Length: 103
Image 1 (cartoon, rainbow, N blue to C red):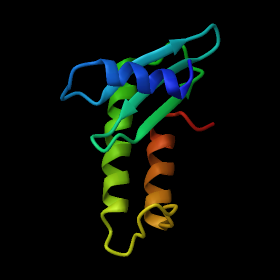
Image 2: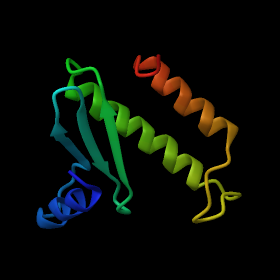
Image 3: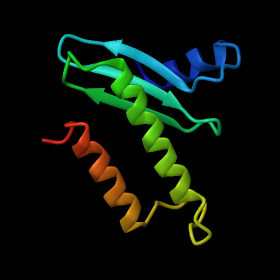
Image 4: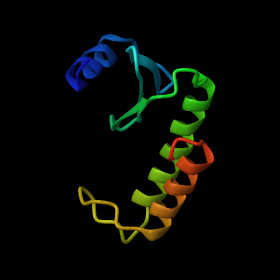
Protein backbone atom coordinates (compact mmCIF):
# COMPACT_ATOMS: atom_id res chain seq x y z
CA UNK A 1 0.00 0.00 0.00
CA UNK A 2 1.40 3.37 -0.99
CA UNK A 3 0.83 6.77 0.57
CA UNK A 4 -1.27 7.54 -2.50
CA UNK A 5 -3.55 4.62 -1.55
CA UNK A 6 -3.87 5.98 1.99
CA UNK A 7 -4.82 9.40 0.66
CA UNK A 8 -7.38 7.87 -1.71
CA UNK A 9 -8.97 5.82 1.05
CA UNK A 10 -9.17 8.85 3.33
CA UNK A 11 -10.70 11.03 0.61
CA UNK A 12 -13.27 8.35 -0.13
CA UNK A 13 -14.56 8.28 3.44
CA UNK A 14 -17.12 10.64 4.87
CA UNK A 15 -15.84 13.21 7.33
CA UNK A 16 -15.02 11.54 10.61
CA UNK A 17 -14.14 12.85 14.02
CA UNK A 18 -11.65 10.01 14.49
CA UNK A 19 -8.30 10.76 12.87
CA UNK A 20 -6.94 7.29 13.56
CA UNK A 21 -6.97 5.30 10.31
CA UNK A 22 -6.16 1.98 11.95
CA UNK A 23 -4.36 -0.98 10.49
CA UNK A 24 -3.57 -0.11 6.88
CA UNK A 25 -1.54 -3.06 5.72
CA UNK A 26 -0.78 -6.22 7.66
CA UNK A 27 2.12 -8.25 6.32
CA UNK A 28 3.82 -11.40 7.49
CA UNK A 29 6.48 -9.49 9.43
CA UNK A 30 5.00 -6.04 10.06
CA UNK A 31 1.85 -4.08 10.71
CA UNK A 32 1.36 -0.66 9.15
CA UNK A 33 -0.89 1.83 10.96
CA UNK A 34 -2.04 5.26 9.87
CA UNK A 35 -3.20 8.52 11.36
CA UNK A 36 -4.19 11.78 9.67
CA UNK A 37 -4.42 15.16 11.35
CA UNK A 38 -7.21 17.67 10.73
CA UNK A 39 -4.73 19.61 8.60
CA UNK A 40 -4.18 16.47 6.47
CA UNK A 41 -0.71 15.59 7.77
CA UNK A 42 -0.35 11.84 7.42
CA UNK A 43 1.51 9.73 9.96
CA UNK A 44 2.46 6.17 9.12
CA UNK A 45 3.85 3.70 11.67
CA UNK A 46 5.51 0.42 10.81
CA UNK A 47 5.56 -2.01 13.75
CA UNK A 48 7.39 -5.32 13.87
CA UNK A 49 5.58 -6.48 17.02
CA UNK A 50 2.68 -8.44 15.57
CA UNK A 51 1.06 -8.69 19.01
CA UNK A 52 0.83 -4.93 19.54
CA UNK A 53 -2.61 -3.71 20.61
CA UNK A 54 -4.37 -1.15 18.43
CA UNK A 55 -5.33 0.84 21.53
CA UNK A 56 -1.62 1.38 22.26
CA UNK A 57 -0.97 2.52 18.68
CA UNK A 58 -3.96 4.86 18.77
CA UNK A 59 -2.76 6.38 22.05
CA UNK A 60 0.78 6.75 20.65
CA UNK A 61 -0.53 8.66 17.63
CA UNK A 62 -2.67 10.93 19.80
CA UNK A 63 0.24 11.81 22.10
CA UNK A 64 2.55 12.28 19.11
CA UNK A 65 -0.02 14.56 17.46
CA UNK A 66 -0.31 16.62 20.65
CA UNK A 67 3.49 17.03 20.90
CA UNK A 68 3.65 17.89 17.18
CA UNK A 69 0.92 20.53 17.58
CA UNK A 70 2.76 22.05 20.54
CA UNK A 71 5.97 22.26 18.48
CA UNK A 72 4.43 23.87 15.40
CA UNK A 73 2.36 26.29 17.48
CA UNK A 74 5.55 27.68 18.99
CA UNK A 75 5.75 31.33 17.84
CA UNK A 76 9.39 30.79 16.85
CA UNK A 77 8.62 27.86 14.56
CA UNK A 78 8.92 28.69 10.85
CA UNK A 79 6.14 27.10 8.80
CA UNK A 80 7.21 24.45 6.27
CA UNK A 81 10.60 24.06 7.93
CA UNK A 82 11.87 21.07 9.91
CA UNK A 83 11.03 21.14 13.61
CA UNK A 84 14.24 22.19 15.32
CA UNK A 85 13.34 21.72 18.97
CA UNK A 86 15.29 19.85 21.62
CA UNK A 87 12.14 19.58 23.70
CA UNK A 88 10.18 18.02 20.82
CA UNK A 89 13.05 15.60 20.14
CA UNK A 90 13.20 14.64 23.81
CA UNK A 91 9.41 14.27 24.12
CA UNK A 92 9.20 12.01 21.06
CA UNK A 93 12.23 9.95 22.12
CA UNK A 94 10.66 9.44 25.56
CA UNK A 95 7.31 8.56 23.99
CA UNK A 96 8.90 5.93 21.76
CA UNK A 97 10.94 4.50 24.63
CA UNK A 98 7.89 4.39 26.90
CA UNK A 99 6.04 2.32 24.32
CA UNK A 100 9.01 -0.05 23.99
CA UNK A 101 9.16 0.65 20.28
CA UNK A 102 12.80 1.73 20.45
CA UNK A 103 15.28 -1.05 21.09
